[in-house]
Length: 144
Ligand SMILES: [Zn+2]
Image (cartoon, protein in one colour):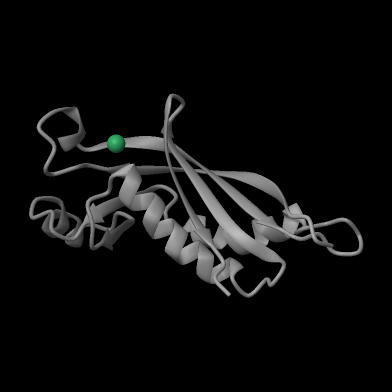
């Protein structure tokens, strides 16, 4: 097999966040129904399969689950971090502002670690949608 192709699967979850630096609505506590398109590019096996969609779910869903119904908190957020520490609410601290751009880079790093061992996969592209009308996209290509 010398030709590559791409397959993709969508994942979704609910998550709260805020952007402390923002000067308008995004500074408020709010949430999104996030969608993540996980697209892999690579070579098919002898059965004509790049990766079973069920296998994609098996490896990605546990990663996504840690964010579902969670408040994603920038660890530099001096309002939310101390507040959340005193509550039982599900939250996750991250060392970056929780923009779609930063999130897609973070997810790309984490998910590439998951997909990299599958040698047939040559590239991983993520499209993260916060809303139906906007997305951030980033890609990692296998290096020799
Ligand atoms: Zn938002």
